[in-house]
Amino acid sequence: MKKTIISLLLASFILGQTPTAYAIGQTSKTTTPKKVSISKSHKQRAKSDAFKYEYINLAWWENFNDTLLTGYIEKAIKNNYDLKNATIAVDEYYQAMKIQFGNELPTAGVAFAPALAKMPNTTSSNWNFAMPGIVNYELDLFLKNRDKTNASKKEYQASLQDERAVYISIASAVGSTYLNIVKLDKMIELQEQIVQDRKLIYDLMLLRNKEGLTSTSDTVKANKSYIAGQTTLTEYKKQREILLNQLCVLIGENPNNAQKISRINYDDLNFSGVIPDEITTEIIGQRPDYLKAEKMVEKAGLDVRIAKKEFLPSFNITGVALFLASDLGRLWTTKNALAALAGGANWSIFTGGRKIANLRIKKDEYQRVLNNYYKTNLTSIQEVNDALVLIKHDTKKYEDTKTQSQLERQDYGLSDAKYAQGTISKLDLTQLKENVLSTDKLVADQKINCLVDYIGLYKAVGSQL
Image (cartoon, rainbow, N blue to C red; front, side, top):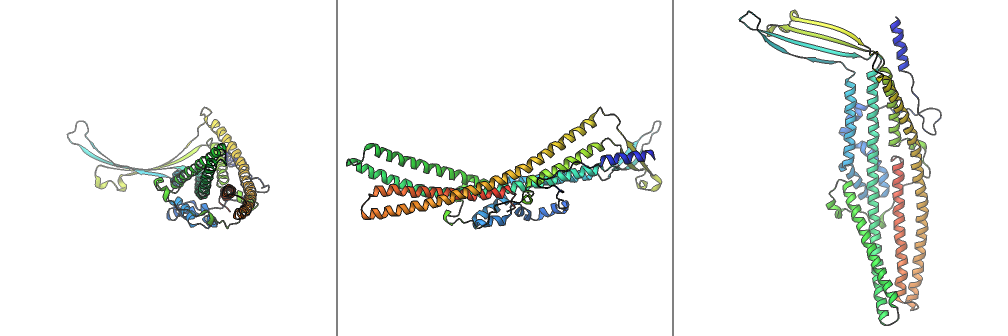
């Protein structure tokens, strides 16, 4: 009776509540996680890739109205090697969970041992046949093995969030790289016009210099400007080739095929989605790193509880069945059978302080994981706020630059009218044209920056836009 009371007291101590973590903005209670059947879910993953498209929220990418872009994202889902490795890692955690679950079940084994023996002072040899069967089960009286399985389950659930984070990251990388290639296409097109006009300006000034109308210094400056324009054009082409190679790797394509990558024309690029001005904390709470941090806190709490249960005794039940006969045909008869059932308890009283140290380590790990959870909470809010700030200010810059571009075109139109009237030269008109092309480059750059900012917000909220 005393032993039973002691066991109950120890069990209540072990099963006591661990500290609860609250997300910022929640003061009443934590959100109850949705209960899912992990085994069933994992089997469904092998049959369908639907969960991958849910990870990246493919419907959001359709707001770009570009089938080439969505096609590349789908290609990355199928071929990207980082994504394949992330999925393999999930399966590794799942199998580790199954291994740990196996420790909760009994183990059974059989053996067969034939023996030929010759006794002293005899001339004959005799055969003997033995077949032992052993079943062993650790009685999980204090649910220690169950807690270990639950801890392994938390690691598996955390790995799902790691996988989701990789999918969102790769989709974002594909989108950003693709859009920057489209931007460089436009920048190269405009820069080629600038180089062409600077060449014309240099040729005109060279002729005027021969006639004594333009100084040699101004002619040299025009030549320098022309060469600088060519250098900028070369830099744009270099950047585009690098991005094309990067996009090939992201979608699992050979970089040697980079020049075959198709993309939308910049002027046809149109985002039709709605970008919110504010993001609720519920959406932030769906970020993969946030959800992973929650699972790791839960696992760390279980690890502390397991470490406490290591102080308790373990109970084992062993069953043995032995068949022994000198004739193989009579081996499996009840007459030649021997069965035994035994139970035992093992309680390590002195371990040199290892269990105490292990408990302290698990408590320290719990505090570290809990701090990481709080930090992830703050970082999530910061990244979302940063993304909203970028969108707000880059959108303002883009609108102002478009207005500037319209004014430059208006100014150029007036100058073109003056050229038609003969009041300004072709050289003057060509020099003014570069202002229009330069502002067009700024517009292209800032338009793509805004679209990349949208992708940044998409990533910051875990694709939940």
